[in-house]
Length: 460
Image 1: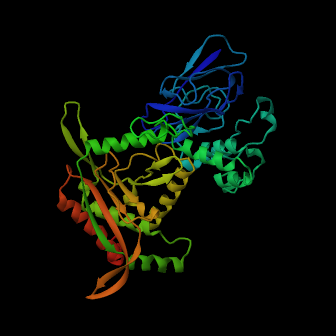
Image 2 (image 1 turned 180 degrees about the horizontal axis):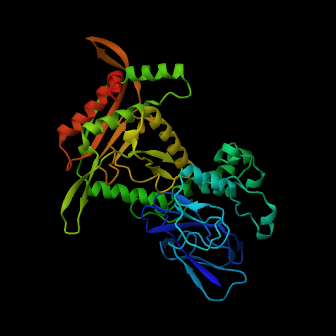
Image 3 (image 1 turned 90 degrees about the vertical axis):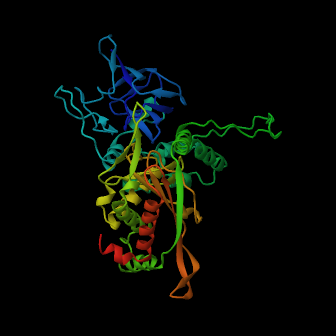
C-alpha cells in the first residue's frame, strides 16, 4: 500500500513552505518520526518527520521549490501492505496503530499508543520538542549504515548544512551544548585548518538568509556599465522580511518621536544587583521592557492593530494584555520572537524569556508560535553600536520602540554639567490609532522610568 503524505500546516495558519533539503531519497527505508525533509516557512526552518514507516516511493518537489500546505510532500510504500493507495492528510497526522517516538512537529506527531484510535496530540513546549529531538535517531549518510550509527545530537538544520559544507562528520563530534548537543561552534572548531572552511562557512551564511552564493555572470549591467558580480534570488526568510517591510510602509501612515534619556540611575541599579547576584541580575533591556509594559497599560492605544473588513470598513482592535515582540538578528535574517503574556512577567522573568527566545531563534529552533503573535515590538539596535533609528513598524502592530546604545555624554544635572549614561529612545507609531499627545506621553513615561527606576518599580 502506498501512503501519500500531504504537507501539514506547520503552525499559525501558514499556507506554504519552501523545500530546503530532502533528508531521504527514493528507495530509502524510513521509520516512524524519522525526519524526511527540511522546509522553511515564513517563520522558521523545521524538519518534517514521517508519520509512517516503509520505503520512499516518490518525492513530490525539488529542493528550492515552494510547496502549498495540503499538497503531496512524499509517498511511502508500506512493506507487506495492500496495493491500494492511501492519502495521509495534515489532519490525519495523528496517532495510529503503530509505535511512535512521541516526536512532534508544531503540534503534530505520533505516540506509542496501539489502541487503534485516532486522537489529536497535545501541543508540546519548545523545550519538550528539543528533548524529543535529542532522543530521536537521525538519518545517517547511507541507508545500509543506519542501524549501526548512534543518534546525532544536533537539531538545527543550519548546523547540519554547515557540517556538510565543511566536510565535518557529525557522528565524530562531542557537542558542547546541553546533554552533548552539537552547536555551530563545535562544527566550526572541528573544521579549523581546512582550506575550504572559510569559503564554505560564507556560502552557508549566505544560504541561511535566503541568498545564493552565485558566481559572477560576467555580463555588464546596462544601467551602470559595471560587471554583474552575482544574482541573489529573493526568497525564504529574506523574501518574507522584504514583503513585511513593504507592507508596513505601504499600509501604515507612521510618525516618529524620540528623546534622549539619562539612564545613569538604571545602569547603577543594575550594577548593584549584579554585584549581589551575578547570575540572576536582569539585563538593562529586561528593565526597559518592564517599563514599556507599564507604559502600555497607561497608553493602551499603542497596543492595538487596525483590521480591515471585506467591505472596506476598518476598526481598531485592542488587546487585554501584551505579547511583547523584540527584534533579534540571526544568521537567517531579522526575526521577531514574541514573549506571550509579557504583561504578567517581572523584569527577572522577562530577562529569562529574552535569553531563551534569542537562543532558540539564533540556533534555528524557534517554532512559528515563538515568532508570531506579538502586539508591540521592542527593538534594541544599540547592540550594533548606533544611537538612533527610524524603525519600520512590525505589521500589523501599531508601534515599535527603538533603544540606542548607552554612552557617556555631557548632561546638565541641577544646573551643572556632568558626565552621564545617556540613551536615545525612538517611538514609531501608526498615526491612525492615536495622535502625537498619546505617543509623546508614552515615550515620556518610559523615559521617566529609566531616569528614576526606583520610583516606577515600586509601583509594579
